[in-house]
Amino acid sequence: MPVITKKPLVEFWQKNARTEKELTKWYNIVVAAAWRNPADVKVTFGPLADFVQTNNGNPVIVFDAANNRCRLITAIHYLKNFPVKGRVYILRVLTHDEYDLEHWKDEL
View (cartoon, rainbow, N blue to C red):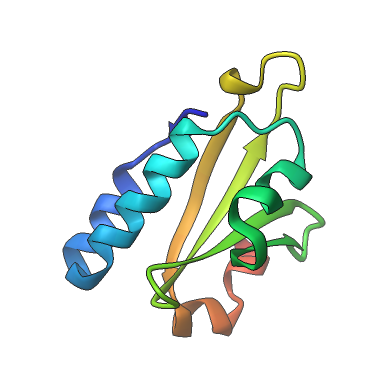
């Protein structure tokens, strides 16, 4: 599935060098995926993917990445008939501490 866009990952690992390998691994898994629904995401990532609602009611998928060093907050647009053409939007890449503040829940 295409990831829109890789730039937030690169910016994050430029500031947090120890995350580059794991974020690249996450990216490569996602672009090779063809998810039809949230259950497919769970099959791929298991407990590393959580489905959360923001305070505005928007559904997001939060990935625990880089060995618990960061959280990727994403929105996934599934296309059941053409899953490889779905989209994964990276909304935020946060450190674990930034994520725990939960400010992102009000922003998204």
